[in-house]
Image (tube, rainbow, N blue to C red; front, side, top):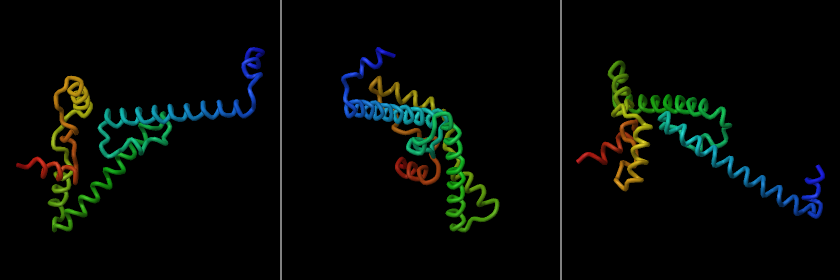
Length: 152
């Protein structure tokens, strides 16, 4: 205990407070970075296209997977409701509406999201061009925009 006291014996209270605040700020910054990286990895690994990193920044690390899954399910339901309303306004009803909603929200392909991410990272290292975004999992308006942009 004497060594600890010797380290701070000549320090003033304001100097110690400044050091404590700097350590606290550094700790908070590192925690934010760790949370962001963990959230990004979780989103990519599980293909949670409707969850953003910012949605998970205030979430504890041990609760992050559950929260991301909850947000994905919640937003997927909202997306389904929006598609249903939009297609119903076009006059579709019953089984025809259900099929149109299913087709509208169905992913274009069944690609492996994490495989695409790894391929994109490897391509960036090798200098080859990889798609900026995995397009097989696009749904809703994103799928429509992509289809319109790539239609030649």
